[in-house]
Length: 197
Image (cartoon, one colour):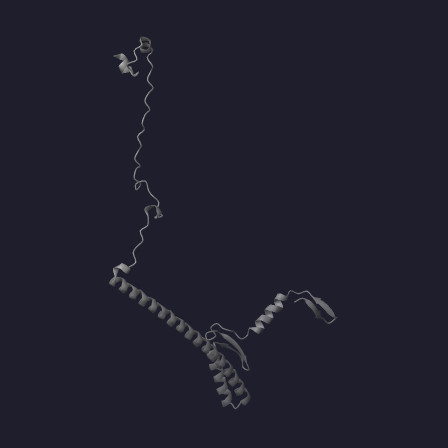
């Protein structure tokens, strides 16, 4: 946050970006890891003999060994200190193991539930198949789709050629013979073949 900061000469406006201080505070507050796989995680432990690095199990073993050495050298203060450090990591390890066991138990329960559901569904399917085999009238019949609703594209080879319609021609108009009208012969119907006779 931006605000006022005390300096040697007085109060001064703090214009520094807050991201640095936030990231430092974030690192300090997350010394104890939450979740994740603590059992295999590597820790740096700062004890009275300096840093001890390793997984929680390795750190417990190291502090237990340092505790034995301190007891043998009659250093009760360091012996108690090492014992407390070993106990701290032992508790962390036990807590992580409880979480792992709880997650494993939950996963196994979910797997058992899923398997039971699958078994029930399988039993229902088998029962339905047995009933259908006993009474064919109850058997589910396949639905036949119309050819036009099949969703497939019709190829030219599959398409049946449409029958061609025959075109009928109109009769040609008959030429009117002026000579037959002049002769007064109306016995014919006006066709050229009759007029020729």
